[in-house]
Image (cartoon, rainbow, N blue to C red; front, side):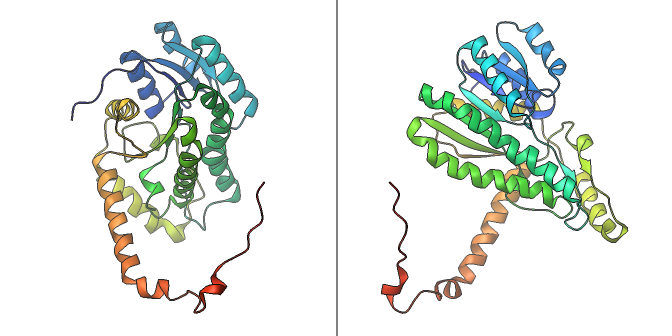
Length: 290
């Protein structure tokens, strides 16, 4: 398909120093848009501003630091006057089975991938509501829709992103704000080399080996094309709430959804057998919300 190649929007991108975030920042600029490129180390995004001073603004942002989030938003608004698209891209991966994963690793994963995303979203929502328009792109993952062994902690953070995004979509629709969950498959980025490895025990070594073998046979996608697809999704007139990126993502997610539906259908009679025999008992008195 021919992708929409132009945007006149201001994009606020977290984690813009590497990976999909960097590719997206570059493609937005090439498409005529403006970018507030944020990263924990501002030196890694200053080159964008130096090369494109009228289109790019660099700001320091650490998703674990609420003050830096507020400062980056205000800095971006001072530079361009508005924020049209918020891309919650900053994140981290981990390699550890559920048993091997330390509590420290688990908490770090959730603090970055879930609580960090929430901090940015909650801080920027007043801006978007005041404007009466905007997009939020939450970067999830294929493994936010189906899980693989040895990356269960990372996967669970991306499942959380799916859930909070579905609720957020409904909450902010009356304010003209749209939410899209982007579900990338495997792309040729630095993500793999930056994975936080837990203590990999000999007990689960066959599990780790199987995962590595799976990745060795995977065809990785082009991050620049992924960036173009995200721009297209925002600029398209089609209502989009989910965007799988990559043929691997599309095939694995749709296969998993079909398998889940088949399982639910198989157990339908058992599922619906739990209703009260007396319908009068089926209503719960709820507290009044004033």
